[in-house]
Image 1 (cartoon, rainbow, N blue to C red):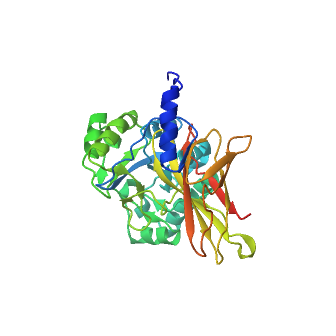
Image 2: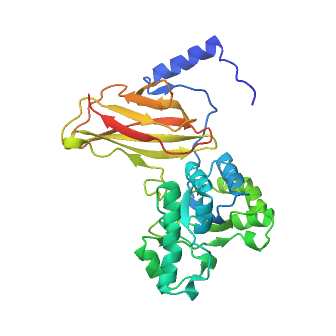
Image 3: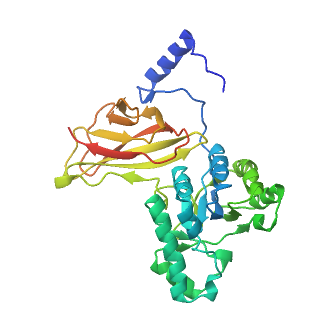
Length: 349
């Protein structure tokens, strides 16, 4: 990438005037291209990849997804997850959602309830061991299901996820055929693909371009319905964090949610909430994961420690919050290959 030139003195003056005009609501800490928010007016679809993780393709698949600014759901086979824990963590760190796809990929409907339970529970444990979080989504191998299997899923807190579009990548479909299949996705739809085929990886840029042209966005899978929805606070993956309630009923709590994502960065929002008494002021701490760096902050005044990963944010104006009320500030994080959610906390002076 060619080095950027420093803005001319006149350009810097214009930028300064613009910031003054908006009352200093945004603090610019790094340069970057102007980013238009994606148009998701026609809804959300879910890109899903079965049968990983695979040493030969998972990393390339993750790179292709992040380069195109989209997130997907990976339904991992338990044995492979146990053997490739670093790849499972890479899925998590890239912001992907991780689901259960059984331990050995058998025909589950030909098994007893006890055997089904073993297949699913071993996979739960393997993924939780790798990521710290047990899956909440399950895709039955071959799409085969019955009442016994659904009962086992329920006992383990899993939502069954099938698909509305089959890419046929497992059946030798070409990249063009995979792209064509994805073009039939509609709001709420889920497409079946697999971690293991270069044709599938090659299809990602065209799939994303087609979704964008139709004002559709890649989303997550609802744990209530098994359908695609916007990636928000109902996220079954580890993208939302919050500080624990303060001891002694203290007044200040903080919670974080990711609001937008692009190919190289994401936006986050922190909500500062007052308890039973009003806040006169507050101080928030946001810790990102190296090599992440915060590029822009708005509605708050930031400072950093020497590592550049721990940011302290104070109100940019009046920091008072009424009892039970809340205020927010936001920031942009340059991911630099790490898509893990920041941790947040809040304290009162």
